[in-house]
Image 1: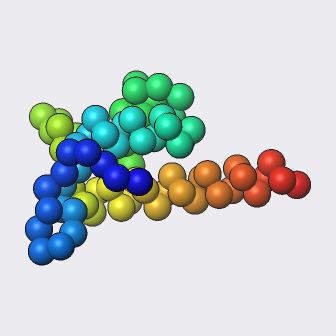
Image 2 (image 1 turned 120 degrees about the horizontal axis):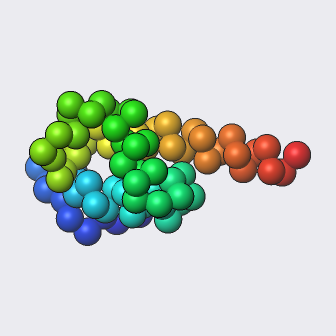
Image 3 (image 1 turned 90 degrees about the vertical axis):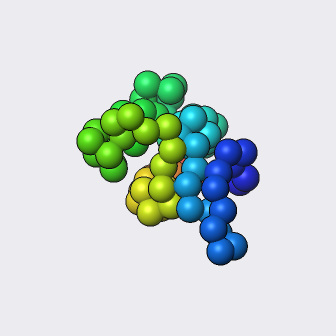
Length: 81
């Protein structure tokens, strides 16, 4: 996955566009729409952290990403059995 809008520092991504993260959550089936994606992000990193932001830090994305990947893996395993 390549996110279009990001900031690089010392060879790795440090900030990611919140819009791109929402689109990715929808594409991966983790969220049904942009509002559900926003809610998922707020639940994971907190509403205060999201206030007045249109970017997400690398650490915030990792917290959200790890939970999303785990959820998708569990759903995939459950569908196979």
